[in-house]
Length: 114
Length: 112
Image (cartoon, rainbow over all chains, first blue to last red; front, side, top):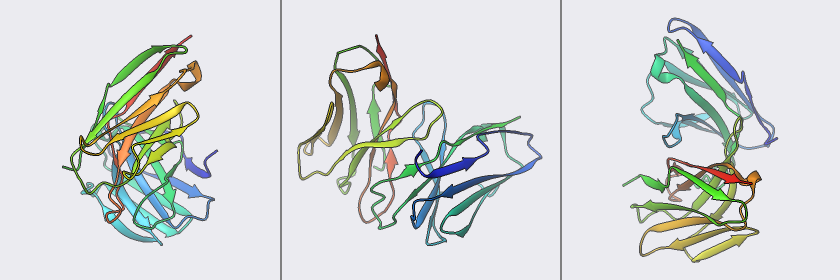
């Protein structure tokens, strides 16, 4: 295991539902990330939190709302999603020193929006 | 200019053969080039990485070759094994941005 745990592993939701993805890291890192992985596309960086402060927001639609209550936990709150939002959502952590030299990824949440 | 272009999209190699995956970039500010390996049902994991002050880095059967003038780098897997079957992502970052840019990924299948 990588030390980064994501729950749930799979999620099916309707377009009107509200759900949350959870990520927890046990590595003592001070930065956490959300990535979106779609088939045959590069991993897309969504959000970066460093020391619980959001330092990156890559023009992500407002229907995705991140929350980082402390350096070990990261949430992604989802509401009124679209079918094109179906993807694997990956959480990662690192020691943030502006280089992202080594990211530790969780196993992801496979999201299907019906 | 922020893109990292990776090829091929998929690759089939016989056991014992050499697997080669190529990446190209445009941003000359990039100064760190990692490769990540992802197995089905798992997140990507760092495999090997290189900085542009060297032209090659080897770790076991995995080698990165780096051509700074051509702005290209490649991953070579020697003596490929069925257990190497996975998706491989190249990536690049510039130290002053803290943002890792990934390639599209290559699905490698090593046949027994």
